[in-house]
Length: 125
Image (cartoon, rainbow, N blue to C red; front, top):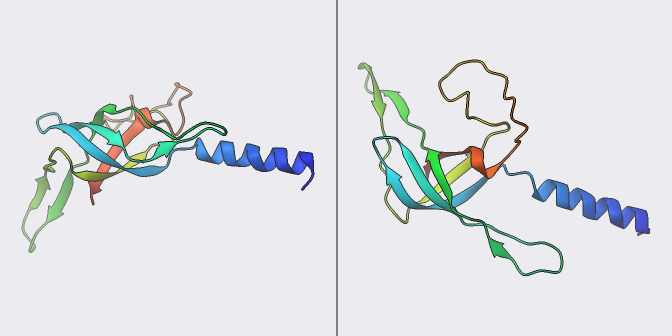
């Protein structure tokens, strides 16, 4: 492979590994009243020439609730119960979710994209 080809291959790999989509995380703490958790990502990151390192814990991660209609009855809202040590699936939103969590249509003026700070817990493994 040429030097240019090698450069672009390494650049592509670096770019793709910097985009967070989803990953398993461990629950370190859960506040049921605010439906937020402190989590520890379970994937390590590695820069070329260095040892893998753990990502830092992520604070105040929203936990999705669920709405179900059971046996034709009224719609019921279910709040998740998470325990310390649970392994959860976390997704990372495409843009900053700070202003959109209240359900309004907003322009995410913050330039943050696919950040671990925009994590949302979607379920337990």
